[in-house]
Structure formats: structure tokens, C-alpha cells
Image (cartoon, rainbow over all chains, first blue to last red; front, side, top):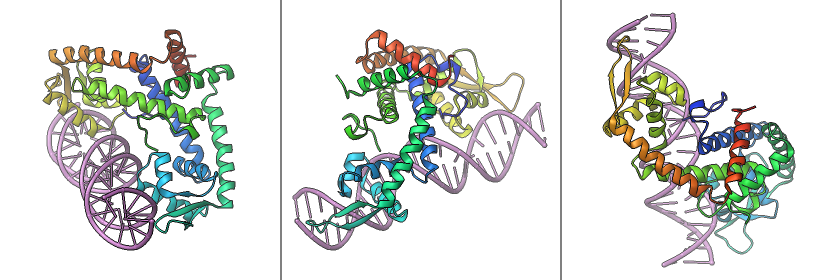
Length: 147
Length: 147
DNA sequence: TATTGTTATACTCTATAACTATA
DNA sequence: TATAGTTATAGAGTATAACAATA
């Protein structure tokens, strides 16, 4: 049930649910390739964007992104190794570490947003701007983020 | 970056790509639970539906569903153990096995389609019938299954 | 030489357990 | 007792390698 570049199997393409999962997987791969071109994984960018609002404790990063604590340890390690973020002592709680966004991280966010916006334009090219807006609206209704 | 039942993280919900992956994952889980209620995994049903057109060689099942050969071995093993399909000798090629759909498999397909249609109705309940049709149309354009 | 089915193996992701140091 | 961070480990799911039988 893997998803490749050829398009969905015709026999199953009339099921909306199958189309949905195929389009999402296809879009996710496209997005992942775009971010990889600036040396990031999707999760890296998600963490960086959260840190843009200020330093954050790792445990709260895990909660906000719905990843398990050990995963966040790895992600922060990688971001630190890339020089995009770093751990510092927490001012009030000696158990916790504050994860800070570094200037290089701010710049990398801008690059990532540039390539990901371009990737989105490519992916949604089959739709007119009006259709793309409609698509977003319908997704938001399904996600329950609008009434 | 896991997806749970609470709805997408508000901070990321304005990105169409993130909404898309969240909705697809949510829908996939809903579909998976529905099929599990009749004892099937999504891949099981996909195989059974393909076999409805007649017996098929395992290698072609793998190709059609884009799964690797060892995965198909496991799936056919499971379907055989469930009594829904079985391996028989291929009439012309002694290397290959013909996978046949059994009467119990035909009945199970009907049950699975019943619960999966109900699951789809539940999942797409936030949309009007007209919107649901539009959503399918836009997905089909993105998947390239219509011009 | 290529293909079918199978077994064995590896690799990634996801999830849990256990431990420390604090609170 | 509970929480933060880390390490270690376990489990799916996915992908590759290698093999015997046959074409």
C-alpha cells in the first residue's frame, strides 16, 4: 500500500478516502524533499517555528508537537549540531533546559519557508487559486478548526 | 509530529499542507478502526477487492498495491488463515501461485464495504453532500486522475 | 538470464521503560 | 510524589538480500 510517483491505482481511485491518503502522502513527500534541500526535516522546522516565540522547555515542545520525549531529545540534539538552536540553563527550574533559537536558526526558517512555499505552489498547481482556497476551507471544516 | 484525537495544533493549522496530512491521518485511523471491527486491515480489503475480478498471481498483487513481495506473502498468509482466500496451483506456470477469493471472502467484502461506507459518512459529516463532492473533485485533480 | 515465492535481515519510526536529578 | 531530561529497549512498518524452483 505504498505510494509512489505514478499516481494512485485506478481501481481504488474512486474512493475518496484512498484519494485523500494518496494525495496527503504525495504532498508530504514533496514537502519533505523541499525541506531536505535546505538540510531540514519537517520536524526540525516545526520546532524552530515554535521557538520563534521565545525559548521553550523540551517537555513543552514535545507536548505541542505530539512527539514522545526521546524523539524531542534527538531533534534538539540535531538542531544544536546544525547550530540552529541550543540548550541553556532554565532560569527557575534546574531540572529543565530552555531551548533557544539561534540567529542561524532564524535565517534557516526563512530559507525553509521560501522553499516550502514554492513546493506548495508546485503541488497545488493543478488547482486554480479559487479552488485552492476552497480546498483549504473544506480541510479546515474536516479538521474541526472552523465552524 | 504524531496525530491524536484532539484536533491539529492551532499554531500550525493555517498551513494547508499540515491540515492535509492531519485530516488524512485522522481519516485513515477512522477507516482503520471501522475495518478492524470486521477483522480486517486496510491492506486485506485491498487484496480481496482485487481478487474479486478473478484469481491473481502474488507478484501482480504486489505490483498493483505497490507493496513489496515479502509483505504480500504475509498478507496472503493472513487471508488464508482467515479463510477468506487461498493459494492454488497456477494452471500454466509452476513457479507461481494463483490466489483465489473464497465465498467467505466475498461475504467479508460486503461487510467491510458496509462499515467503511458508514465510517466515511461519519468522517465527512462536517461537509454538505455538495461540498463532499467538490472535495473529491479537487483531490482527483491533485492526484492527476482527471484533467 | 529472468521471474516467482519465500526466508532472513536491516533500517526507520514509533512507543515504552527505567534511571538521574531535581521539584 | 511528580516532573524534566536522558538512555536503553521494544515493536511496527518498510525495504533489501539471498535463495530454491521454474521459465
